[in-house]
Image (cartoon, rainbow, N blue to C red):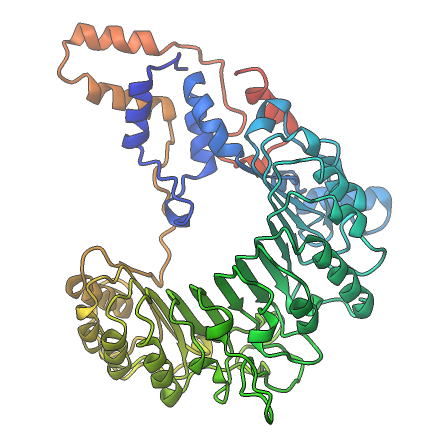
Length: 545
């Protein structure tokens, strides 16, 4: 294995192996298996890799999931079928200081259950944990929340696929006085035995307690009603996202809902169209009689980002856009198709923009002098006239996203050539990100691989600025680098560094940095940290530091 390497060689190796760590680009993130292989070559590299490996970690060990044969053996032993309890897999104390985000989940692969409560006594020792994500299919245990409340640096709490009926958790949540970001979301298909009235009351109590301190809130409309949001004071709230489904009950106009949020800068009404029949929802309208409702532009004059889903034709929000908007997203969202043919299924109030409404929104966007990002979900494939109107109305756009509604069920190919779509966009000199989702059409020139896709990509690449990122329809799953033999690869790097040196200097350098200690083996060469058993992690990271 390698002995300790000088820092200049270490960072040269990083550059040579193209370790891209940009969190926003999943395709370019280094694979954990490769980082582990890198860490197994040198103790100095291990100190660099550890924070990357364990910055975000999990309470479960997918690698410990039994095979079908092991599961059958277990069932024969107990004489019945049922849940298998996974062993409690935690992390050695040496990695605790590096954990900043923790995922806690209680179900794995259907019938497998993880012992998530084993995390509870460890939580107070995760001194740098600032983000806790709980994926639980029943109310979170109060003891787990109380344990998390001891972490003064914990800023973000997520409850995903949660249900919050049952005994009140207000006491535990009220102790999370250091939180700045809170997320409550639900599973798309909720159990039928949920006590909705009790759940809404519990959530309302929690939000009244935490409302004065939160700066970011993401919450499912299934868990709350508009009136509760409108009556709570939110003096520090910067971001509000409403997700899942439109709240039941009375619909309060959007400007009234956000009237107690003076610092709000990012607003998302990102509701999904669902399977349950319901009337269309209007977020903004003129009011009745002599009592008109306030306009969004007057309530939130400093709003910089607005996302709204399934907006109806008669909605007045298009006339109330604040002039400070930098991001405008008018999209169509819906629940996923789980157990049915998407061609036969239906989502109530799934609403995209027809041609008339598309130009109406483009005209409204033209008045937003600061607009840099625009996203529209169109009823039909984007046309050259739509793209030309966007380019003329929004010359400073940096991000443009156009999606054809029901794309996966639409077998009609676009009647437009790639050339005719790209031509209007050339005048968008600041454009850096272009995403267009539609059926390409057979009239585009063919190429050897994926003919339609390749020809469209080539057309965009040759006509638009080199700095424009074009989203890809086909994912490239190739790793940024793959160290099949890390010691050999690093030796090659050193050889390249020493090409100008004499053979004796090269030999002396390699002997200095390499030993023939073949006994050292990484116990987890091609598996990621979430796959590891505690013994595997201890084998390297407890005694090698």
